[in-house]
Image 1 (cartoon, rainbow, N blue to C red):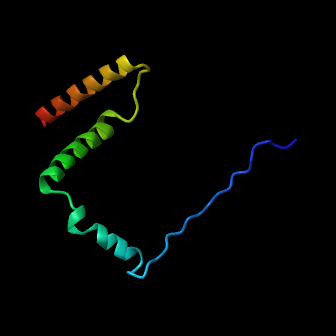
Image 2: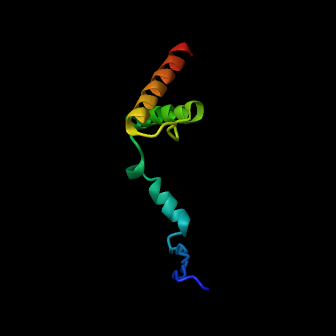
Image 3: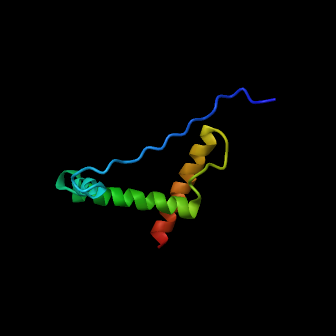
Length: 90
């Protein structure tokens, strides 16, 4: 007995190298001044990213231990409190 499911057709899309230098030209265009972050925004973003990274590495923030929104919220509050305590004691 064969499966009635339709066969999956996989497609592979290959990037086209343009006359402007291939993908290197694309990367150079993204590094121009219009795509750079202002220093104030970057420092704020780096602080947020480091806090999230610390939460994931030290306090297992990727997944919630408990089912339900209320318990998950309580876990997030306790984790944030623990992160602040660690930051103050460090």
